[in-house]
Length: 185
Image 1 (cartoon, one colour):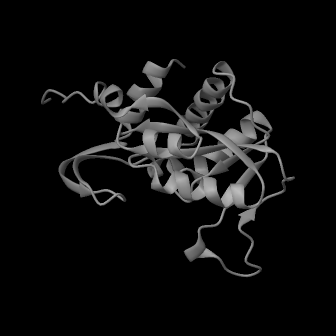
Image 2: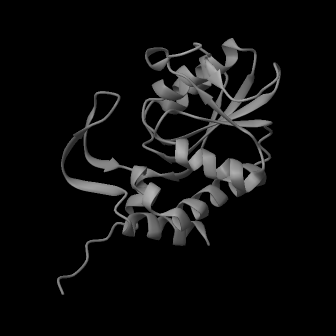
C-alpha cells in the first residue's frame, strides 16, 4: 500500500476530525483533531500503518534495537510495529501512572541499546521529550523519534534541543489534502 493510499484510508476512517475547536494536549485550540485511537477496531489498517512506519525507518536508515511508545496514543501502533519487525517493544511509564514495582520502563532492555520512540501525533513535542528522558535515565540511547502525523508545531525544535531527530510519515497539511468534502448523495 502506498503512503497516499494509506493516507486516504486513514481519512476515510475519520482519523481527521473537524467541526469544532479541539483543545490539544499542548493547550492549543485547533479546528482539526487527529485521532488514531479508533484503529483498535481496524486491525488491517493498523497493520498497514505499522508496516509503513517500519519501512520508513528502514528506508531512512534509522538504527534501533528497541521501539518505544508514547503512552497511550501510539501503544497499539508500536505493538504492531514490534510484531511486524520482530523488534522488541518498550513501554515507558509516565511518572503519574507508576504502580506496583515502580519500573520506569516495561520490557527487556540492556543499557546502551538504541531506541526509536514512536508517537501518533506531534504538536509541541512535550510528550515525546518526556519519554526520551525516561529512556535516557535508564541509560538507553535515543537519537530518533518517528510520528505518524506532525502538526508542524514546536516539536522539531524541542526534540532537536535534546539531540533527537524528529521524523514523520505525514504532515497535517499532507493528511488534510486527502480530507475532501464528499458531495451529497
